[in-house]
Length: 102
Image 1: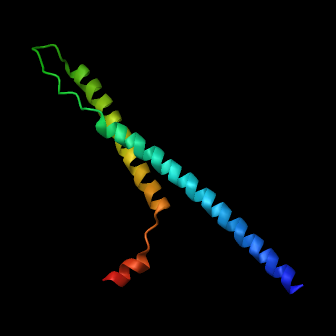
Image 2 (image 1 turned 60 degrees about the vertical axis):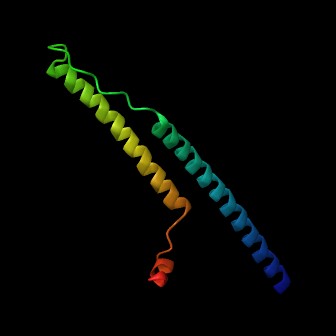
Image 3 (image 1 turned 30 degrees about the vertical axis):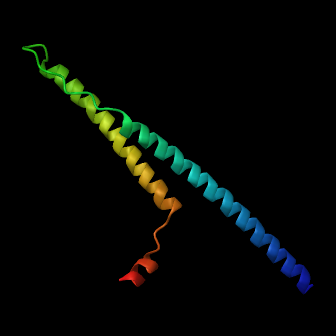
C-alpha cells in the first residue's frame, strides 16, 4: 500500500514537472516572439520630419499627422510593456534574494 502511494506521488511529480516544462516553453516562445517584434520596431528607421512649405500644411492635416504618430507611439509603448511583462512572467524577480544581497 505504501509503495503504491509512493509510486502515485512520483507520477504526480513527473506530471507536474512535464506541465511546468511545457508552460516554460510556451512563455519563452511568447517572449521570443515579442522580442523579435520589438527588434523589428527598433530597426525600422524613423522618417525625417516633413518640411512645411507655405500654406501646404493646414492645421487639420497637421492634427491628422499627429494623431497617426500618436497611434504608432502608443502601439510601440504597448509592445514594450507587453515584452516587459512577458519577461517578468518568464523570469520572476526573487525579492528575498534581492534583500539578501543588501
